[in-house]
Picture: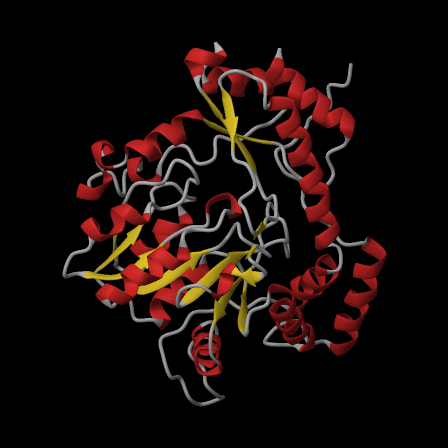
Length: 369
């Protein structure tokens, strides 16, 4: 019996010979960072692929969040979700901003628009929703609320590479959207990220901020940081862009097999595709009803581990329970019942382009036994 480890994700890797050939070009030019030709090319190709007007590359996915808040001069309080990766809220904290948590919609895992208005105070300046698992937020409702109260909207779209609604990129929603190109993501540049904006003037400001605030050799226009992407990761990203569609197609087939096999298992539920949405199949979360299933989420999680199948309790625990944030008034469990329930019953199954039929059978066998 195959006991090899099945990991929850696996990085999309470019062909090594192709990568080596492009590295030779970098070595020949001796231009390895600071807005080189491959960096410019990747920004151009990503903007076209993602159907966005302007994009700025970063060295990881957290710094775009921090920089977006700086660029929009966000202060005071920002309404956000506790059901996300910690970088979402850490970006606020690093900017001296107080996060205000609102509960999620259990049908999507995303911020519940019905809960936003009650959380707005005179100190509120923005809303930071997350497209959880790449499932689009209700961007229309969120924008209506933001417009009503004069708030900015920054989307943490770390999971939402290439996701579209009715043929239009969700990355164009709000004032800005951020992306992560971490190795675990559908599309990766090893480490990396990006910020999507609507106009050239804003892009210019962002590009200044990610390069110490330099506008030219002698002019510093703002207290920026250093968060540029280098040429090596840019060529890695260019090569991965050529194969990301086939990787997403492979992920979709895994999702189809999971849904077919698990649809009849009592006590296990999962998300279906949303109408009109082009998904990227970045994650496949399942939700365990212990009473119906006969086993708790954690019992299943450790049982899978015993069979060398790695799931991930993603997102558990909630951000609002961490020591930095649990003292906030909005972090009280009574304020976030849906988020707590989802965090306590979720497991993300292995999901990546390299899973084969035998892998899928072993994963499902752990769950259906």
